[in-house]
Structure formats: structure tokens, C-alpha cells
Image 1 (spheres, rainbow, N blue to C red):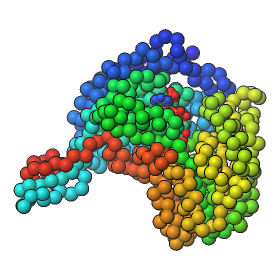
Image 2 (image 1 turned 120 degrees about the vertical axis):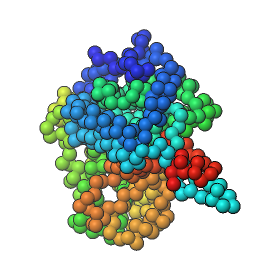
Image 3 (image 1 turned 90 degrees about the horizontal axis):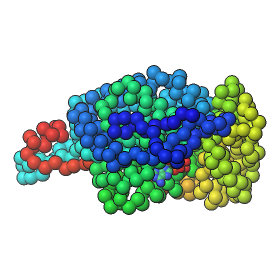
Image 4 (image 1 turned 180 degrees about the vertical axis):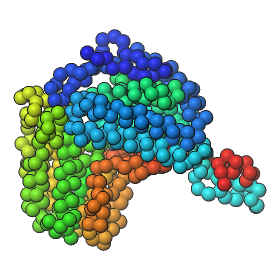
Length: 519
Ligand code: NAP
């Protein structure tokens, strides 16, 4: 069986001892590989990344770091076919869903590479204009952002083993920080191969990109105030990381991307069979089923005006009944298995709880056999739609994230203030989508709840022909959200570099200030 390795201190190494975790093929349940990080000297690994990788990166301008990112993107893209197959095997994602992850990774690296070229030959990000601080312009001031003199530790969730690593690494490397990335153990086969392609292509200096396969063990004990931790995963793990004693004591920056009960609203102006109506049905169903619902941006709560409830339900059931759950290698499949046995148990348990307050309108709420898979094997769960018994949905619907192809329709009175209140009941989310051609309704809604989501996707007839769907985290738009969603921020173009840089106020002669930050 393949033994996965970490890449630290400029070399590959497997864990020692016998405490290996197993990775499984979610379609067959066969073991695929084993992994452990036992025996790795994390203190030395961090020091090596800071001193070797960090020093090398800070010698490079934004444009040169951008070139590194483009080289990384190309190195991974050259192995696209192999990576797609690996993703289908390790994550259970269909070919299309695997592309979402792998192409998302290379596209995001490329995007930040191009951004580096735009930023040019500088090393400092100007932050606002220069200002006269004294009686005359002899005493001048300006703010700027400089690379942090530490290492960026990236901890990722199981659902995006390629994109998750790439979207964080792109921002950190462009900002001038070396990265040690730690994918979720269950799907780290894909990340390991991505990093291997970059190492084989020899396209980044030693120490710039490290990989931990397995647990982080005592790593956090060795971090200091110039380091950064960026985490994506469950709120439970987030809390443990946020409250880590050493991270608190050293004021290490921690960015959290956690759970999210994303909402989609159908506004009352949208009539059945209109373009926006059809977009709503198509996109919300895709959000439920893409990556088998294992997407942080997936729609979990669907709000529709009471008088449209029956028609929406019928249209969504019809759309969902065209989805085939099965092996990602079977031709007809468009919904793969869940990634792990634990995921399946957690989804089954979650749906059982939701059924206390909502009725099933599509799906059985049980594990199913997958098309093209051995009966009784595989972590299959078919798309499932529920209808809330209470108008607006009871508290549980606003509180329980079932991380699978599961969503709940909730009727409401169609009023924008009610919709705003329902959106905020999710206690902070990554993305909220609004389907409406009424700018008035949309702005009444946004005015009341604009601070409760990190991103708002406003679907209308005007943009329908280019609509990507609410679940796509575009590199140029912010990804993150308040409250339950973790309070973090990633992506958003150049904004992503803020986490990895220190804002400084420079005060001095105008010449000295402008020489360092620019004019
Ligand atoms: P998870 O169990 O919290 O694991 C996330 C990562 O944390 C994994 O790499 C895991 O490693 C690691 N980890 C676990 N315990 C740790 C500890 N004590 N110290 C340091 N790292 C630790 O989450 P998951 O099951 O992979 O992901 C599902 C959750 O992530 C869902 O709730 C979803 O909402 C959320 N998510 C959010 C976003 C977003 O952008 N907001 C994106 C994707 C997913 P091991 O695998 O080795 O345990």
C-alpha cells in the first residue's frame, strides 16, 4: 500500500512507528494509502521554512513571486489527467466535480501569478496615499504593507484538496511568506501529488512550499508572532486552534473559514418559467448536488414565498430526479459518494435530526447503493430535499449544517425585511444568493442584512447569461464570512495579501518614505 510522505526540510519523509491512518476509496471502501507524520521535527521544519524559504521569497519582487505561482500552476496542470483520476478515486468526486477542484487550483494560482505581474517590481504594498505630517511636507508619512517574517501554516478541509491548498498558498507566496500546507488526512493523496509535481518541476526555491501529511502534532507550540495560521474546516476544530495557548500568547494571526448555512432567496417578483425562475431552480439544485453537497458554499436553506412553495418544490424535485448517484467512474453518474464513512454517518444523523422539524420531499434519508458500485459498498447518499414545517424554518434549520447533498425549503411571506431576518438567523455565512429582478427588493434586503454574509450573489435576468452560480469562489471576490462562518477572509484579489503582511506607518522625510513605499 502506498505510504504518503510529508515534504519538509527540503526532503520527503514518511512517518515512523505504527500509528498510520488509512485513506479509503469512498466508492469501494478499499484502503488506498496510509499516512502518519510521527517522528517529524516540526520545530526544525518551521525554522527551515522561515529561514530558507522566507529569505528567498523576500528577495523576490511581486512580479517574480507571480512567476513562481504561474510555474506552479503549469506544473500541476501538466498532470491534470492523472490528478483528476486520483481525485475521483480518493475523494469520490465525479470527473466534473474533480475538475472544479483541480482546475480551480491551477486557475487561482495563475490568477495570483498575473496579479503579481501587475504589482510589478516592488516589495511593499502601498496602503493609502502619502500625507503631510508636519508643518510642511518635510515631515511625511505613508502606510504600507510588508511581508511577515514567518511561515504561513495552512490547514485545509477534506473537500478541496487541490484548490484549498492553492488558494491559500497563492496569496501567501505572493505576499512573500513561505507555506507549510496540511491537507485533511482523508483526501491528502491528491494534495501530496500536487506538491510532488511542483517539487519535481523544481519551480520554487527550497523551503517555500512544505507539506504535512498526517497530524500537525506539536507544530503550533513552535509558532510566533510573525507566523500565520489559516484554517478551513469545522467550527469545532476552529475553536481548538483559535484558543491554542501559544497562538494566543504570541499573538499569531489566525484566519478561520468554518461552517456556513448559506441561504438562497427567491423574491416575490420572480414568476414561474421566467428566466430568473429557471436560473434559480437550476442553480440551487446544482448547489445541492455539486461535489455531493460537500461544499462550504452550498445552499443549505432555500427561502421561497409561501404562494410559490408548491411550484418550486415540484420543479426542484423534477430537476433532482435527473441526478444519478453512483461511482464517479460510471458514465451516468453526476453525484459521487460522500468522501468518508464518517461523512456518511454525520449526514445520516443530520438528516434524521432535520426530519424532526421538516418533511422529506425528495430522497429517502437513507444510504443508497451507487450506480456502478458493488451493492452495500460505498458512502452513497442521494440528493435530499426537505420542507420546513414552520414558516421561515425552525431554529435547527438555521443551526445545523448537514455537509452533504441536503437542503431545506422554507416558505416565507416574501417581504424583504423578513428575508433579511431569516438570513441573519444563520449567524453569519459565506454566501447568500438573491434571485430577483427588483432592485428595490434586493436593496431593501441588503440594507438590513448586508453584514451577515461575506458575499452576496445577486442573480437577475440581466446577468443570467454569465451567471456562474453562487457556489463558485472566484479569486477576485472575497471568500469568508462573519460569525459561524469563522470571521475570516480569503481571496478578494490583492486583499488576500493582507493576512500575510504587516501594515506599517512610515514617518520621515518625504524622500525616505517614498523611496521605500513609493510615491
Ligand atoms: P475538520 O475535521 O475540522 O478538519 C479540518 C482540518 O483540520 C483537517 O486538515 C484536519 O486534519 C485538521 N485538524 C483536525 N484537528 C486538528 C487540530 N486539533 N489541530 C490542527 N488541525 C486539526 O473539518 P473537515 O471535516 O475536514 O471539513 C468539513 C467542515 O469544513 C465543514 O463543517 C465545512 O463547513 C467546513 N468547510 C468550510 C470551508 C470554508 O471555506 N468556510 C470550506 C470547506 C469546508 P485531519 O484530517 O488530519 O484530522
